[in-house]
Image (cartoon, rainbow, N blue to C red; front, top):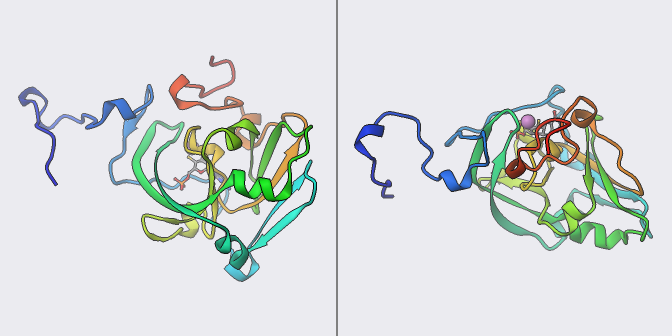
Length: 206
Ligand SMILES: Nc1nc2c(c(=O)[nH]1)N[C@H]1C(S)=C(S)[C@@H](COP(=O)(O)O)O[C@H]1N2
Ligand SMILES: [Mo]
């Protein structure tokens, strides 16, 4: 692999190789992938794992581990942006599109928001458009290996166009609602939507 040429005056200084890929106020964490969680890491065995889509849907749906992995899935490479300012570029995942999972349950016309739940009780709210009109996934592999428990394995939500707190680890339920209901960090003063490119970190940001 060839490195981009280094400008003399910048030798040894931390300098993002791909500044165009970094939202305002973020730094490139390189190969590092910090672990952030409000709760201790739960060990969820795959034979006990399930994901339910319920709330404002035509028919509630639950996938077990084999059922999820039997859904059409894809490999993807995305950039992760944590509100604590690190970004991890080009992280590879394998997973199913949230839009495909929701389609199987049939969102009702009144549904406007999703509340994503972790089996731990952690939650994050999302406008339905953020998982239907933007790519978002439930993923079970990262960097070619099974998603580790620390990073949300067996499976986590991945909504890479928003700050990473929206990407609920150990995801167990996607609840469709007709109103916005703030999740764990949103109740704690973080922005309701969390678009890193608009630097929507805290309530009151644009
Ligand atoms: N269940 C759960 N999911 C969570 C969190 C959490 O505390 N609990 N933290 C969020 C935050 S703030 C970040 S930055 C990412 C961290 O994911 P990582 O540990 O894989 O880097 O998970 C998000 N999903
Ligand atoms: Mo975060």
